[in-house]
Every structure is written in C-alpha cells, then in structure tokens.
Length: 192
Length: 337
Image 1 (spheres, each protein chain N blue to C red):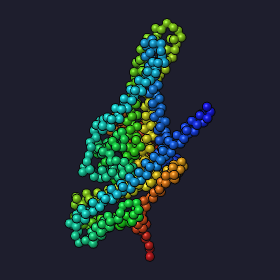
Image 2 (cartoon, rainbow over the protein chains, first blue to last red):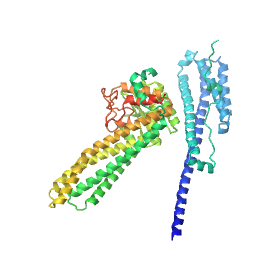
Image 3 (cartoon, chains in turn green, brown):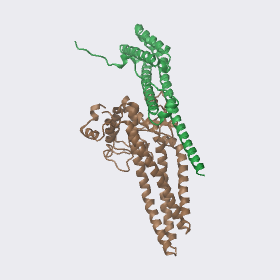
Image 4 (cartoon, rainbow over the protein chains, first blue to last red):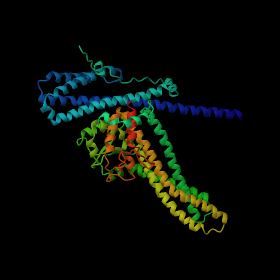
C-alpha cells in the first residue's frame, strides 16, 4: 500500500516536472521566433528603401542632371547593398553596405539643398518624407530586433530556463551592431 | 519646446524624489504588479454586491433560505458582468470611436502621421493600428481596441498641428504603449464593470427598501434583528460601492498612465519628446466636451474634461483619471539622467 503511494507521488512529481519543462521549452521557442521575425522586419524596411531610390534618383536627375557623380554613387551603393545576402551570417557585411548607402543618400540630400526648384517639387518632398520615414523605420526595426534578442538571451542565460536551453542547445543570438566606423564615430575636430 | 523650458526649479525638486537607478523596466514591472491587485479587488466587489442583493431580495420575499438566495444573487451578478464584458469586447472600441466623432484616415491624407505611427508600432513589434483624426480644437489623443490586432489610435486635429515631429512621436508612442500593454482592453472591461456596479448598486438600494418594508412584518424577534443588520449592510454597500468602484478604476487608470509614459520612452528612447508634448497639453485648458464623457475620460492621454483651474494638474484626487502632469513630466525627466 505504502509502495503504491510512493509510486504515485514519484509519478506525480515526474508529470509536474515534465509540464514545467515543456512550458520552459515553449517560452524559449517563442522568443527565438520573435528574434527571427524581428530580423525579417528589418529586411522589409531595407527592401522598401531599395524600392524608393530609383524614383528619387529619377526625380533629382530632372533638376540636377550634372550631379551625375553623386547620383551614380547612390545607385551603385544601392546595388551593392542588394547584392549582399540578408541572412544572419552576413550581418556585418550587410550592415557595412547599408551604412555606405545611408552616407551616399545623405550626400544626395545635401546636394539637393542647392536646388530650390527641386526642393519645391511635391513629388521630391513626398519622396523625402518617405525616405526619412523609412530610415527611421530601419532604425526602429533594428531597435526592436535588439529588444527581442535581449529577451531571448535573458531567458537563455538565466535560471531556470538556462537548463532547458542547454539541454536542447538553443543557440546564442547576436545583437545588431553598427560595424561601419564612419557611422559609429562622431566627426573629429582638430584645431591647428 | 526647448529642453531648458522643461527644467524649472520646481521640476528639479520633483526629479530628486526619484531614485537614480529607475528605468522603464522597473516602472513597467511595478505598475503591472499593482494593476493586477486592483483588478482582483474590482471583481470581488462585484460578486459581493450581487450576493447581498440576493439576500435582500430573499428577505423581502420572507424566504427562509438566505444563503442560497445570496449565492444565486452573486452568481447572477457575475453572469451579468460576463455579458457586459462580451459586449465591450466586440463592440466597445467602435462605440468609443463613434462617440468621439473620429474619422479614419489614409496615408495620403497625412503621410508624416502615418510614418510616425508605423515607426512606433515597428519599435513595439505590433501590427499597424488604424489611424483616426478627431476634428476638434481641443488637444488630446487616445487608443482603443481589444488587442493589438484590433487597435486604433486617434488624435485631435489641433494636437496634430501643434506638435513637433519628436513630440508627436512621444504622444503616439504613449498610445502604442497602451496598446502593447493591453491597457486598451483593460480600460474597456473596467469601464463596463464600473458601469455595471453602479447599475447593480442602484438596484440594490431599491430592493433593500422593498426588503425593509416586508421584513418589518416579521413576527420572530431574532429573525427581525438579523434582517435589520443585513439591510443596513446592503444600504451602506449600495451607497459606498459605486464610489469605491470609481475610486479603484481611477487609481488603476492613473497607474496605467505612468506605465504608458514609461513604455513610450522604451519605444522612442527619448523622454524629452513626450515631456514636451505633455507640457503643451497641460497649457491647453479647453475641455473636449464633444468627444468625451465621464465614461471614456480615462482613455485619453490627458483628462479631456479638465477645466482651466485643473489644467496644470498640480493637484490630484482619488477621482482623477490622470496623474498630475507635472508628476508625469518629472518621472519622464528622471529617466534622462
């Protein structure tokens, strides 16, 4: 009789631990999916920017055709950025190419400042707001990606979920960081 | 709004009241815990009123089975509350948008506003909510819906025009934070619950009067004494409960406002945008009478029923739907240290 009770207690404990394990596992899987989602959301915004650029270049060309050097720099930076695969393995390369594109676009916008008729063009103004909006969205989608990675990593590294993470080998996820030195460092000013 | 304008001497004193390590993560955790306690209190109150009402009715009918009647009353109240919750679940947000006169707009109508909403929902990892404009001269904004998949943000045209992009981002981030925290659902259910409690207490007062008249005819002395005790309790509860429910709802609403302010900073990483917008909002004293009433006041970013006397929001009472603005700004600026 007492053997039966002990057996039942052990079985009960086993079931409780099992349920607890499944719950922990599901938490980790859900957070890992959030990471994948967050990553693909960045791609959506990057893609949006690629699509905007040809229109922007055409519009600027209409007013400032002799700025062809700046325009070509934007086109080639865009094509280089598209060429880099957007999977996590090429994150650093992609970040660099996107940084170069952002800089080229910045130069284009600076050039546009010198053309009052261009700045008054409504389709240019719309494109400009679209582009600013898209660049903000790229930034916020990266911020969101880092937020979900932080939540995933917190679960992966803290007790008790860390046991389940180790058992089922949940891989470490890297944060998105800016690898482009030009983008990261503030301009240096020297007084000579 | 310049940064310097936000930091007057009074504000510096207020900021000092907050510990230096306070982050938005701490604020969210603390507010969530306290909010949970408030909801439980609310539900217990509703059940108790139903039970006492059942008892009072049983007394009026000279029924011997007081406990059973009380149980029936309690269950009936919970079922009633359940139906109310279902109604607000499926129809509540549309009713609120209709009442406020909000008009849904397309990206072509206001690209910048759409971009700001899109940016904030991306930062929160949510689907895109519907965007509404309220054609009003008062300054206000609110969010509604039952979950992030069925959410909407609304802003008055006057507020839309008055804010800089950073401030607009702060306001929208505050509303998106309400969506993200499921405040929009809680606020809607809470409003329904409070409405039901007020209604039930009104019914309770009527039934206890009925019980009093009938109970007075009882021949048994002991039974008569017990009845009087229960009737007195019913009367007190009928008067006190609606007041208490309102107080709980408003305490809850104030907590949620702080929580949404903290959540907004988590999204924008820029407390100054929202702080500047709140300052502008507090300087506007025009009440939003057309679009809001006592029932929906707690859903707005700033109490829409404010008058010029209360506009600065320096003083708060247990019936305030929003914390004092200066307190909210102080908490935001405390995050910039």
